[in-house]
Image (cartoon, rainbow, N blue to C red; front, side, top):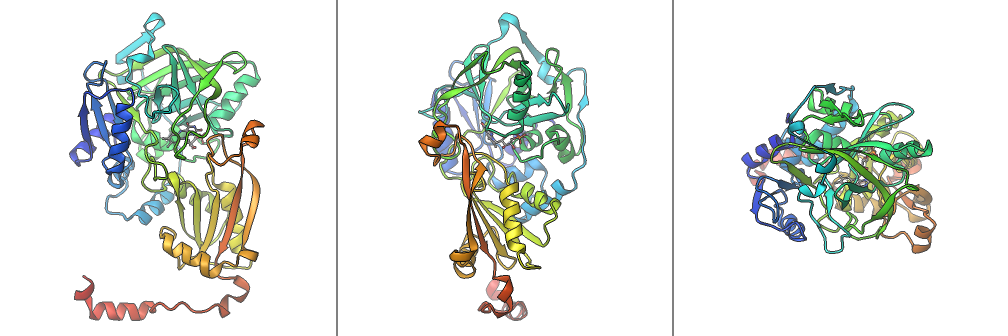
Length: 477
Ligand SMILES: Cc1cc2nc3c(=O)[nH]c(=O)nc-3n(C[C@H](O)[C@H](O)[C@H](O)COP(=O)(O)O)c2cc1C
């Protein structure tokens, strides 16, 4: 496993996954090169000699965005199929045992320590990624560390970060996310919220920070577990929060209550494919210190493909945690979980072996409650029988057509949390800060009470298929 982002990039270079670009401008050129590369399925780009910046101050984009990079980054066997990857990662999540971080005295992130007058976040080549963006976004592949002031545990989340000025950052967290709940607890006590933000860190910590890890579980402990050894951290001299020792760039700072300071954040070209949340007042972080490695590498994970799969090529961040959550909540007979649609977030498909009347509806409502995320995540929940491949959209559509009677098997349930980046949120709802969405629950399983009379499927039986395959093996080689 990798100690840092640069070790991971080196491995990706050896596998021929990285394109190098020199001389690009942070003002829209990097973002547009990135977008064109994503369209051409060459998403991992290492930018150097960025206009106006010293050689060595680099930026890498989309490190997880190919199937092979995802497997390498998370230590998943490279030969596993896409469906097997989701099950493998779900099995990893199931067996989670906390591996807490260990404190060390120093590390590479402390190669350069900047305080007082030296603080200037423009030292780093943060791009303006999209033409409609309201500013430069240094944080798209970042992680933000906060400590719950009541419970004491550490959250690490990926939330976007915009540059306001040399010493001030804006950070947008969707309502209900763990980082949002924690900062609001400080503000309710009239306190500033201490934060550490890393802009470039090892792959496992980034993966944990951007996936649905349950409330109360620290992503530091989770990433330590998935990488097989603890994350090394340095106690931040100003906030006392842990700073990952091998981070490329980190800041320590404080977020004051919004009544004291908040600034216009956005618009930003969001993963939904729109600038949906426009520009609004959002909380800020006042930077108290900057730490960085020599020749630092910023990690960029900007949205670059409206409707595409986004940061991860497979729903490892949504389907695997949901599968674990369903089983931990006591649901029986779960055979597969997949999440289709933009950023692998929107259409949840769960296959089950039906065991009792109401089983499919129970699993569907549990999945609707357990899938979390912003911007319309989990808008459609579909439960299918276990002869349907959850990853195969044509098979799912066949089940919806043939096993779901719309009059009795579809429910439209309002009141689930979405977020300001949901493009279809009507202006009047947005205006009163009602960021809730409706979820559609589709029971596309054979009706349980007459399952034995359901028409048989006209596919050759497994025995006949095997017999024919064996006899005609050269035809199907
Ligand atoms: C590249 C990337 C960027 C993200 N940006 C944001 C963001 O700006 N705001 C936000 O609330 N969530 C964002 N997310 C989603 C959160 O990281 C994700 O929901 C995570 O589970 C939040 O952690 P938490 O559950 O500890 O709050 C992003 C995810 C990824 C992969």
